[in-house]
Image (cartoon, rainbow, N blue to C red):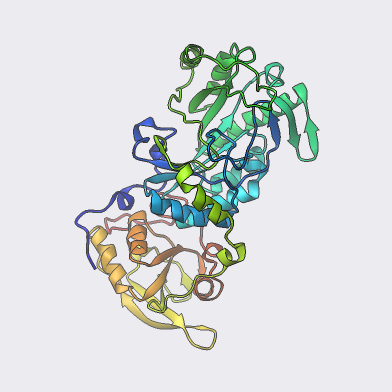
Length: 443
């Protein structure tokens, strides 16, 4: 085993560092990338400028994707994406419909990605109509950034942008549609900010409709606590009501951004990403990855859900436990680890106890622990910091944070393969339980 001289960026950076989103922070756009996972095909509104083509690899605009994925397929695709471009820091969902017209698929995808890649940022773009019903679930899923598209804060203006808005089984049109949508958008923004989520608003600048309304939009959104405003020029899409409208000139766009900038910071580097965009903003790999995306969309769901084959070289599970019944110790505070295995009769047996490496030593302590547990495929703990998690998983040992009986965790490892069922949600950047922080190298 080779011990690195210095920890890597992945080992040191905090979980979900919000500054590493290239759309919200242009300073990192050449170092950090994003992937849009197209798991949301349905939409609950019909915008007058939107024409969603699913299979169009040569067109780059929102609403376009070459394939649609299920959540499990999206996780498989995420694995392939990170192999091709390890600089991806953001997993996003931006369609091709609206993520919260497909709430179950959206939230399941985020949960699956977060379970496997806890350092990833999670970003979702929505029209806002279905967001209020899922605000708590959005926060629990670990979504860090949200974009809401707001084209008007006055229904007299907004009614021209939407052919219809469908709320449940009721379809609205005209001013009533615009009124409902703006109320939900406002509720979404307020609720997201109350939950500590970074909020960007996209606005489609449409000459003759909302060009004289942008300042009011910016002023209103500023009062709601929006973090960033992205004013984008209308793309007249053929076959839509706005297909023959004039797009704004560059001078018009610059002038309106300047006016809005008095109220909110402006996003000036938007690439109008597809629903399957992947890579750095300046080096999109959508075309290159289209074949991989298509292949993942054909993966058998049952096979993806099946438990992975057991590693015969790692027959055991390590457990941090105070009394041998519950998983109830933090990795950094455990003085010893119980080693468990199967008993050959459908149950489990404790093989032995092993003392933990002494406190201190930074990442070196965790490489020593990985060596100590080299015949274990999983370590069950009540909490674990980001650095030890990264080191152990780099060495092939999966860290599972859980609360409850040891037998529950062992059943998930050996029988069902469903580790997500026993995991507890990570609430903090480094520790999910009360760590004493005594310089013992817990995270």
